[in-house]
Image (cartoon, rainbow, N blue to C red):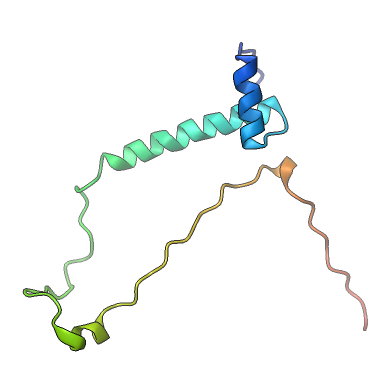
Length: 103
């Protein structure tokens, strides 16, 4: 949808430089996506402490784990994974198709 808006030129230039956006449209759309994501986070935060975790069939520990015996049965820690922002189609590098042939 085409829309005309008055945007501060200095602000838009700073956003384009900071976000590596090539066009004004990319910069504005990135800002709109950010606002939408922040609104979704706020909605999730409303549920903090209100959702049950697990299914209730886990064994309950009264005194907590004791000694080396508990260490051997403890689950392995998980590592957090970073999630990358999707790259707009116009900024993606073209993929090179593998050549199929006889060797």
